[in-house]
Length: 348
Image 1 (cartoon, rainbow, N blue to C red):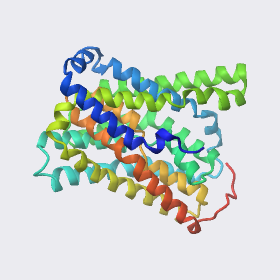
Image 2 (tube, rainbow, N blue to C red):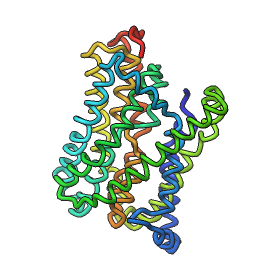
Image 3 (cartoon, helix red, strand yellow):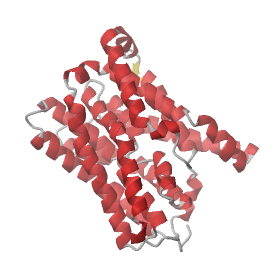
Image 4 (cartoon, helix red, strand yellow):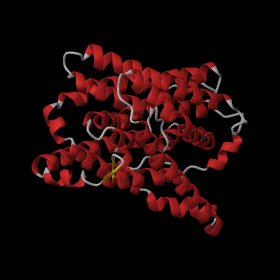
């Protein structure tokens, strides 16, 4: 799998969409005000539709039957689970708290400090689902093993995302709308997961696996990116005042997010070396830990905190920095293959 044009230049497209959204919010404030009227249980319906367009095509790529192979060569899976669910959310919380409440204390207003921390927490509790297949491919990762890692993470999200986010937000003194949090996970994880699994089953049953992989999935190749970019335009149009009044904050938010990304990558990557895993398992393990399911983070931020646009802004900065940082980590992984066994001896 090679990285597509849109994926390669995603940061540039994100910047352009940010500018378009801010311009719309500034020059046509009645547009976001009109769209903001369409809400159910604090979930913005137009944004919800766009988010489904992002997440559903990604879920189509996941073969959850691969979970049956978790018992074979399990060390890489244990590493992925530990890093993503016992380490990553809490290091994100610690690093973000340090920067927003201490280092940037006199730069960021108190109310925005909590908003940005909440956004960082949402990113930290959502491990990557789709883009990791690109990073795995660029590091010549074992595609079958990466599939199992991603599939099991998606299932764990259903169980651990809500309690981890609720706990860390509660510790931060941020009010947690639990009903909306559960509703968000149901709408933006459970619904597209079930829909995609049903689609996969029906298409393969009637058309075959080869048709599904080579002809059906490619039809959605640009749907996810289009949904993401349109969502960004809409979100930034709703947040134009905040951004225009605090342009420096985008840089300030990016600093702890970048540090966290490098930290988690090297924790997982060095952990894989310690466990004597082969490079084609170690590299994807590091990539999964370092990258985020930012589509879910953005969706939950908008749903949970519709009156606190700083939360969504922090998650969107995560989108902004992820692609260039992950490409740097890909280069690091490719240059350190000699640390590992280069050929996979134990097949998934």
